[in-house]
Length: 493
Image 1 (cartoon, rainbow, N blue to C red):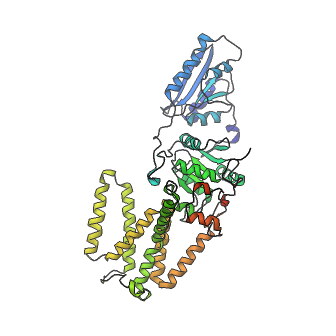
Image 2 (cartoon, rainbow, N blue to C red; image 1 turned 90 degrees about the vertical axis):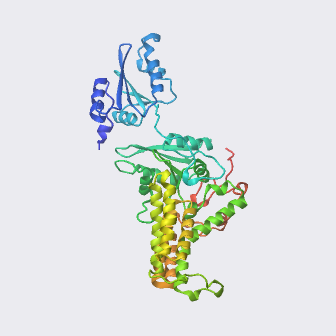
Image 3 (cartoon, rainbow, N blue to C red; image 1 turned 90 degrees about the horizontal axis):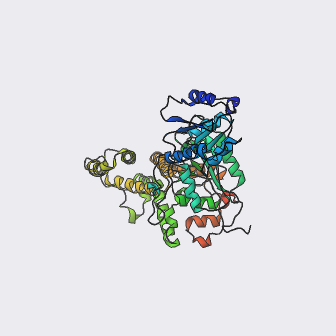
C-alpha cells in the first residue's frame, strides 16, 4: 500500500520521468492493453495514456486530430497547455496534479493528456465499458411497466435514475473503494428529502472500507455497511428496477450504486420492504391490494404450513372432525419429519441445479424432477403423497416471495420450526414462533427497527402495508427514514 507522500507526489514536468513511473507502477510495456500515444506539437511533447478496451476509440481519434491540428492552425503562444485544453472538444475535461490521480484515472478507463514542462494533466472521460444494454430484470418482472433495468455500468445506472427524477437536488456522490480494485461507489439521495445523518453515516462507513477489492461488488459493501454476521434476514433491499429505485429516493431512502453490479442497495429497509413488489403499483389499488394479500398468504404458507401440518400429524386430536381427513392415511417406514426434510432439501437441490443447468437442458431437468424423482419416490414408499403436496405448496410460497434473500431466510426458519415441532409438539411450535418474532423485533438495520410499522406499531403506516393506497392518497413519506420534507409535494422554494 503506497504511503501518503507517494500518493501526493506531483506529476513530473519531464515526460520521460512520467513514462518510467508508469512502466514501474502499472506495467506499461508489459501489459498489452496499457498504452501511450506520443505526439510532438509546436516543439513540445504531448503524451496520452489510455487502457484499450475501456475507452471509445473513435472519441480518442477525434481528440488527437484536434490536438494535432494545433501545428497548422495555432500561433505559438506562451500558454501552450491552455491551447491544448481548449482543443479538447469534450464536455468532461478535468485537471489532475498527482501521479496517484494519473494512475487511478487511466485504470478507470479515462485518458490523460500530459504536456512537457507542465506539472499537471488533463483527464478526458471517454469511457466505454463493455456490458449489456438495459433490459427487464428476470427476478422483478411485471405484466405492465418499464422494461429497462440496471446494468453493470454505474454511469448507465445513474443516468436511468436521472431520467426519472429530474430534480436539481438529486445528488450522486462518488467514492473509490478497494486498494487494488478502486471500485466506483455512488451514494444517491435527494438533498432536501433524505436525512443528513443517514447520508453521513453511510458515507463514513463506505469511506472506512479497507479491502483489496470489491469483486463481489454490492454484497461486499453490504457486509461492511450493516455488519450482518450470521443473521439470515436481509438488512438492505436490492433492486434492479430503475422505477423502484426512483420511488425509494422520493420517499427519503439513500441508495448505493456499485460499479460492475446491476443491483442497487436501498437503505434503510424493514421486513415489509422485502414483501412488496412493483407489480402491485402497476395495477389498480384494488387489484394491487389483492395481489399483495395473495403474496402475504404465500409467505405465511412458506413459513408455517409445513410445521402446522406436521403438528396435526403428530397430534391428530387437535383437528376438528370436519378436518380429520388431513394427515397421511398410509403407513411408512420413514418418519414424516424426515420425509419433509428430505423433500424440502431436495427442492433446494433442484433450485440450485436449475441455476447451473444450461437453458436448453432445463426442460429435461424438470421432467427428471417431476417424473423420475417425485412419482417414483412415492411409488417405492419413500414419501407419502401429502408430504409432496405440502412441500410443493410451501415451495410455491417461497418462490412467491419477492426477495430471494428473504425467501431463503424463511426456509431456514421453517426447518428450525419443524425441528421444534418434532421434538416438543405444541409447546415447541409456540416457543419457537415466539423466539422467532422476538429475534426479528430485535434486529435493526442502520438504527431502523426491522418490524416497523408493526413493532413499534404505527397504525397509519401499517394500513399502507395491508392496503395498496392510490398515489393521490399517499401524501406523507414514511417516518421511518426521518425525511426532511414529510410531504410528497413540491416545495414553494
